[in-house]
Length: 403
Image (cartoon, rainbow, N blue to C red; front, top):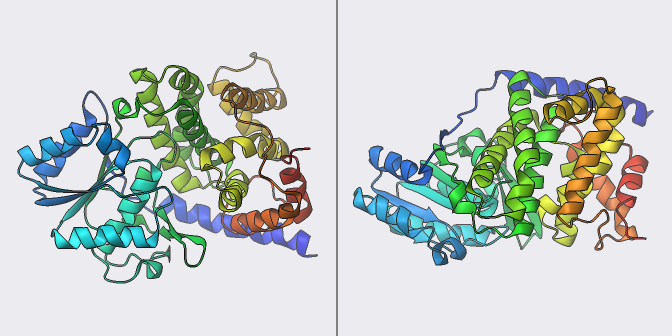
């Protein structure tokens, strides 16, 4: 009986979430693109009369010279800049609190971050702690950033997470051996710069993985039952941009045009899934990451074709529209044909990027708990087109087991 009732309750819950997403305004950041978007963002910070900025980043952008021109621009405009470059992947509570200490010691009134998803997530929580005098663990969960955040500005250096336009940040708690989300619309940056020139040094394997992450965001947002007209428009454009530019960005990392298009794709996909949500691809991939420390984009890429195969009977029309938008198939092809072409295209991209079809780290004994955790994550949270039972989820995860 539970198996029959649960999808119904799930559906009712999703209707409520969709209604909320349709009416809840989100404070989207001002977005700079064009010739020198990062410099334009610095000039905005100066225009807003910020006096002291904490520049949150990691060692690599400092070493490769990405940070100094921005410091020079800010300091020329009278802004004091304090650099904190100790952000690591999967930022920890301890690491973020170290940055908060630097922020307070230097009386910083705003935060600028340059980096990938980890840097942007960390900066969000740092900016939140700048206004909220309580431990980070008391900020985790939903709508607990009660006093807002310091003005935050973001420059992503990878094209995938879309973190610059999401309302969430993830922090690692090594003591509790867990990852915890901070979720609140107040975490949104004031302004962001999409600057493909800053992504020219990203290695091919990271470019591929983050690009597939952006594609996953776009596709799962588009087939979500919470999809809206505005999220559809963003998801379609993001999908088109990834399909047209990711292979070029991977093969020719110095191609500025491809990099800029991928930056925009990631940004649009981030806005789409922030409103429409994601699905079982993310739910399973999150658990691969937690257990085996697989990079998130790579995990998404591995999982996506299997979940889309399963979901296809309930979303063939939606996948077919994405295929048509990307000029796949022939004029008179059926929705099923086009949907299968779209999934096959994803498999071909994975093959081109040397992303495997199975996961070497996956252990058969872990499959039941991975399936259970993935279903718990998706339950009453993700508006998936087709519900999974424990048995079905285990079967799908099992397909990724190396024989």
